[in-house]
Image (tube, rainbow, N blue to C red; front, side, top):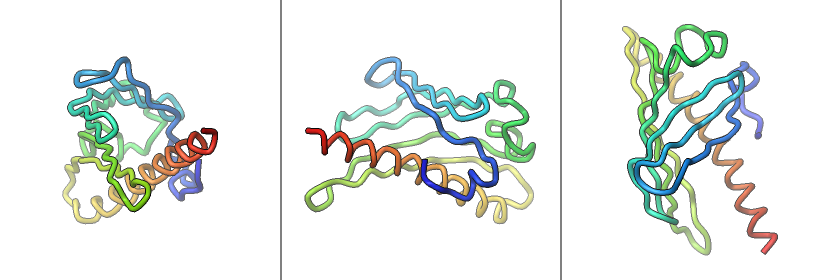
Length: 142
């Protein structure tokens, strides 16, 4: 896992994401440290091109010690709604892009939105760094 400031601030690190099968309707389980899990349903499946999914965070399932009370995912103030990976051809290789949509429900969304985007950028860029390393290691073994 690459260095990211959010992990210094004790944000749970991603551990794994698994699919129960391939294709639209597949269930994806994303797990993070300290018992944090997100249940996701695949809504788009284009092999070697893209995958999209809705994200269900159950605030009663996520340990209350995993996050600050104001940033409980799936809670009153914040939620992550969906995610999408897209492979884009680039030169002799490709670029993997990860995007997500989230909801803020505060009286100070402009300020909270800046922090939310910063945290999601840190999480997503660390995930993409791990995927990149794994893909490069796999290609080197061929």
